[in-house]
Length: 329
Image (tube, one colour):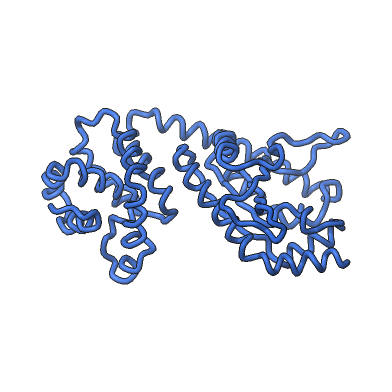
């Protein structure tokens, strides 16, 4: 009892640092997965105090503080099954693993019966950043990697499976859940196939590919949603400045890394969460992924950019971007 009480008070006092450790880990993985061109959503959380205490009592831990390993957690939800291993490689390549990854993609057969579990990966790592706990040790973070379909299944079935073991679930319910797991697998395979076919389709234009590249790079700065229709309108104009750029995607990536600090400052002052944008609604293109291409063109081909822009889009939109980038048109 005293061990749980001590762990409870310690968790209360260190919770702000645990939240920060989870946030820093998610931010790191958000940048790294974007650079690896992995389509995913990354969220983070610190375990709620009530959940921490409940788990300590329920599991009857001798040392709850050290044995509860998911105090900080990050979830990577990828678009389809084909991204799972790629996301795992990003985690392994950028964080220090505490234990071998746990692979739950195959349902385990115990005494002739499959367990009710959903396909996912768990990785226990040291959290990003240099935060330390009261003992001077770096915080750990549990990384969950799952697909969008798996995430939907998990959220739907969590309450039932969390409160009962797989052998206690009524047969009719378990049968339904097994069917849904099969549908999850089928859904993932079809999404992966569809994405692959679309990327190879002749109608998937250079504009779409360029926008995808810009979106991946933009996600290393912000997760803010953007207007796809506006992006397509602007990209149709920007393409006119790239006719002789054979490897522009690589050039844009290099530009982004070379000017990362300047870009971070620009998005902080003018981007989607800035006071200027939220108060006045100006600088709308600074809240769009194609802003990276505009900044690059302002740096390397501003007269060409202005020449194709003036006849197609409002001049004020380009002048706003030039102001942000400290370029005179």
